[in-house]
Image (cartoon, rainbow, N blue to C red; front, side, top):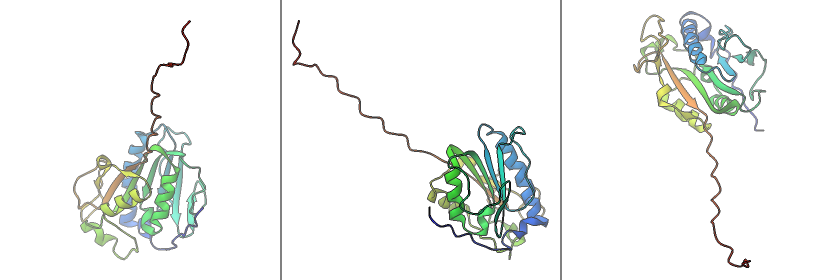
Length: 219
């Protein structure tokens, strides 16, 4: 197994612990919970940047694993580092809230792709560098990218970005109001991307050609 290098940046995700960052995270959590209720058939993995536990939304069963990232790795339902000590293809849905913006994005998304089941979906919440709201997180040491860059990162680890699941949420400049539905306004604070794990279909064997056995003797 390749070695993983976990980027230790103590203050990278601290912006989400209070104030505007905390309010954005809380609003995202409501929207992500609504998304998960539409996908209850398989277990879900939820990765967040702060220790506030999201609600259990999958009918109250223990089918949701929650981890939050900190400078030493992850805590929550498990205490671990990358690579995640989780079986491959174990989750039908994954929510990632800004954890990738602290560094080690390729390793993190690669692990998400590994533990996501075929046909499973990943919802990625990212800060939008095109939004005027970016001045609110200026100096927070977050590694913020635009939507096209994150879509490329998802493809790099073998996931297929879905245009229908992409959109924007959050305020434009002031406040923290955030409707649960997606908007096409590219200047809102948060960009939401969705990707699917697809597996190439096996090529069936060529059908056998029918032919007469001309060497058979007649009765």
